[in-house]
Amino acid sequence: MMQVRRAGEKLDDALNKLSDAKRLIYEAHVAMAVGQGADGGGTTQGLNIGEALATIHALRANLMRVYKEVGAELNALVNAPKR
Image (tube, rainbow, N blue to C red; front, side, top):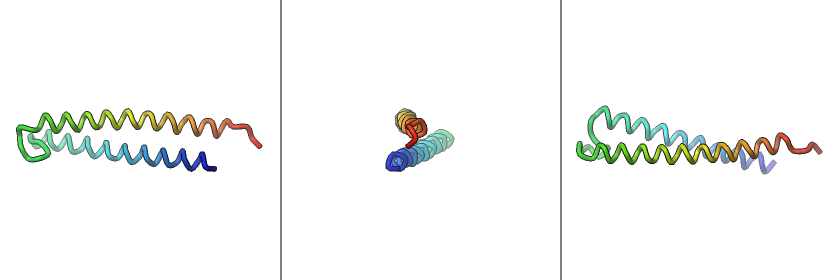
């Protein structure tokens, strides 16, 4: 049972990170549409968008790692010998 709980916690963590990534994508699109950076200055647009995209890519890589770990744990639980 503890393994199932741990797998569920990892999945919850991954979903929270995905939500953060969606928010960052939205903020990046808004900043591009408005034509200015997140701080309101037009000169920092590229830097802010670049930082947002780098963060999104890092979150995506982390999500993929977590999903693989959770999947492996769940497969191990499903394929475990029955008692």
